[in-house]
Length: 201
Image (cartoon, rainbow, N blue to C red):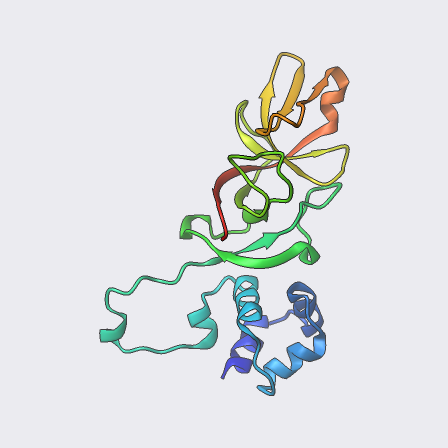
């Protein structure tokens, strides 16, 4: 049953830890595992993403060979975050707002989806768009990436390097470039590179 599968996947993780990752109460996790309550689809997606399994595997769904022959394999899920944490740029569980499918080649701990907030990168990247981010500490000049300035919340910008300066550029002309020269370049840290984007309607 579903509760048994969740308990099996949880392994040595405590119910409290799983509840924190999912953004639900510990008692809710307990009821799921005791098959006293079934999670909704959104929570099922979060559980599947947390353990890096497909929804089919989580629900132990069975079909016969004639039904599955030629059927597309379900895509793995990656977490969607609302922001990159201030300071060290590490993604914390409380920042996960959803899970979204991705290609298998991106299904690892080095990738995540970022939900865009604001219009500074419009019209190419709009408010609410999802960006697939690969965690890395450096990007090439001309790349679009996630940058943390002065340990604050990460921003999505195009970067241009000069001999002794870094310029973070918005696609929206109403937002002036952010330029850092000399020692000020140390105020900027790379958190990741934008791999692709998609728009949710």
